[in-house]
Amino acid sequence: MSFQDHFSGHAADYARYRPDYPDELFAWLAGQVPAHELALDVATGNGQAAHGLVRHFARVRASDASAAQLAEAPADPRISYVCEAAEQCALPDASVDLITVAQALHWLDQPRFFAEVKRLLKPGGALAVWHYPRLKVGGELGAVYEAFHATVAPYWPPERLLVEQGYQTIAWPFPAEPVPAFTLERRWDLAALLGYLGSWSSTRRAAQALGSDPVAAYTPRFADAWGAEMTRLFRWPLQLYLGHRLV
Image 1: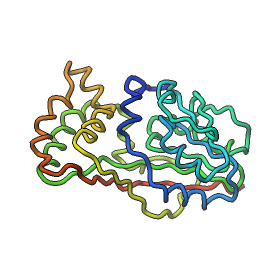
Image 2 (image 1 turned 180 degrees about the horizontal axis):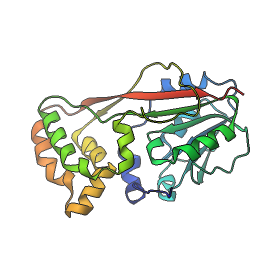
Image 3 (image 1 turned 45 degrees about the vertical axis):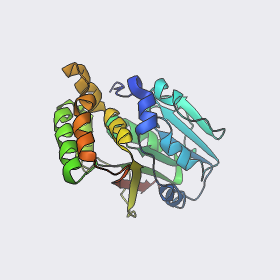
Image 4 (image 1 turned 90 degrees about the vertical axis):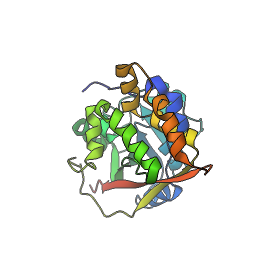
């Protein structure tokens, strides 16, 4: 499976508008492994998850196949950014305490990646994978949002179907364990919401196919529906998998 790059062309927008993850998620994950020497965040993008992990691990290796994405990641002396495929990591066997994949497993060759996970994890180490479903918006704004999504939905890459299915069809490498509920929250103004919609891979593909920017076309309708509030609170429930390598 070759690397399908849907984000390098707008890596700066991805870094600016994609939401990051709650601190309590990383604190909980750190509590699920016995050692905290090295965490590996694969398909790190701009390092959103890596910067959460580094508060709890001595070192973090953050890898991505897109050099453009990595170039937008904030520097930290404890984070090593490496341009490499998730399915072929240069780390030695049994060297990693925790491996994470945030909103990206659907882009990977899962059987090959899971083989790497089994090779890389120390006994007692864990794999954590999470994603968030499509944002739900109510009221008049929600009606415009759903119309926008209907316009760009035919242009989602086929791998994105796994997100719509809630990762339910994935053959995990270890038995799934009970996990608490985590919610991603962001308070945005209208410009931030439009920037987020513009960072979707489907939006970029739709613009190329249609010859015009769908976000620009919908901006007046979003503005009319936004109302008098300066900002609005948006929530996504995180869907989390956790499994341990026991031996």
